[in-house]
Length: 385
Image (cartoon, rainbow, N blue to C red):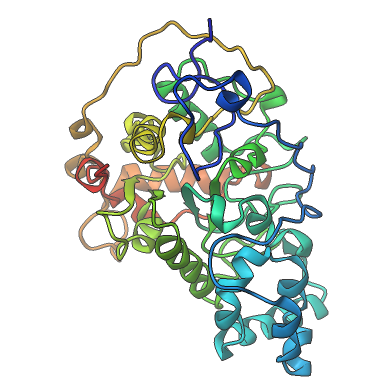
């Protein structure tokens, strides 16, 4: 008898079937669990996706032929490494003056010998691991990790042997609260490519950063492109997508999304700065799957597991926490109404001091302190099956 899993309630542990159709109630074992998937590459840099069945007909060679010599030089990375399902919808954006100015800036950084993360070939790995027509969930990150052997183009994810950074550890805790059978990857790993392969778009709003300098490439032009990517998802994925927006910056990215068509789950950020203000109790992973089950059927929910074990059993009942318990207590935890004044919130200052005194090896991604005021009680009214 199939065992409970990390999917919705007591669903089955398996990679979800394609969202084009629901599984038959009395289908075969193969149709229920889905066809086997090829293992993702370690780096995610050589994976090539088939052209997307979604969107306009796109002749890549014909489009490239319309570019100027300078555009071809500046957009070489996009032409060669961005999945065509995304390039077909973002091609107008990347030839705009603002994006070309960003590419010139990055070119100068590289020529100056400045080390940039993630490695160039990984900047668009999110497009290759999660082609547009596969997107069912979007997790919005902020800045890429800025230390060695961390960022590889997927928000919150790190490659082995790097252990999961603090925010990802807290994400694991949140999943465990929803699904007690969840197992942390071996060696405290943080590679999230399995999620990406299952339709979870792990998108940072800024796609590059200088080594050891958090937010050093913010407001240079990446935010415009990634907002366009979010807009494309909301327009093209008409069946509905779940957006997980953690922290104030991520929340700003989803303000214009149609909440009748899509599900918006907002909360404080999982960073150590704000995680205890509601993230661990927000039940976003279960709520995400509940909503997907309504829209796509049982085969469309996300398998959150990251281990190779296929028969994880958990008999512990899921404790449902009312959404009202996730509301931020601003009377004790929020910053002073005048954020420019110093010395008005000793608790906050202590957190900041502790954060700044840790070693660079333990530094997490850039976290806007305004995340302490992020709304955490909007998910119930925002997700309508």
